[in-house]
Length: 189
Ligand code: AMP
Image 1 (tube, rainbow, N blue to C red):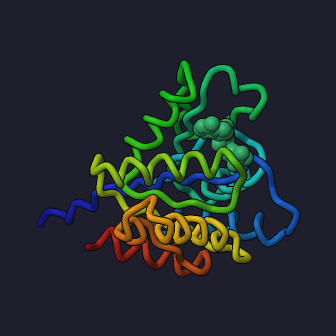
Image 2 (cartoon, helix red, strand yellow):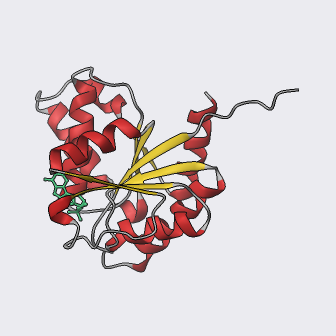
Image 3 (spheres, protein in one colour):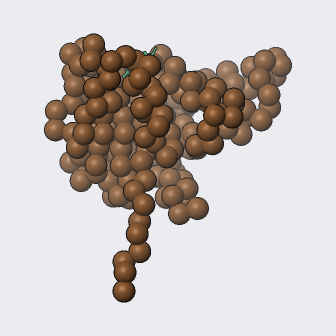
């Protein structure tokens, strides 16, 4: 009898190139990386060995996940390209990197991060708003990190600059285990 074919499930993660001031952020990145491996999901990320990005990728690799990094050539030194990944894709620009991060993920997860993380999140959200894709977008609310983002979107809708439906185009999960459980449910849906 043939074994059932389990399609690989790729999770593109956006998160900080800094670790943040509270060690809880690093702990969450570590837990999430290991959790992806345990659920046999692939990690796709920005390819740097800095901040939460590096911690996440290191934990996922150590726990046996397949990890693909996507980094623009000019950032290979600044973000210290991660050596030992399953695959490192080097792009000619930030824009190509973002396109690849988008294309390779079945789902997007946002862990805490800075302006680059916001930029990446807003971009995939605006693409969804324009009907360019239907991929799930999950923000993981470590220490309430996602609350200002949620408040900004709510205020934008209230002021009439976005449709109320945008609220349904992303979801916020309270912690790493809820995010992993949601990914498992999405994969089997
Ligand atoms: P940050 O959240 O600012 O620590 O950045 C997280 C990731 O986003 C890093 O890999 C940055 O290279 C990337 N990033 C920074 N600025 C941008 C931008 N304007 N567009 C896309 N990605 C960016």
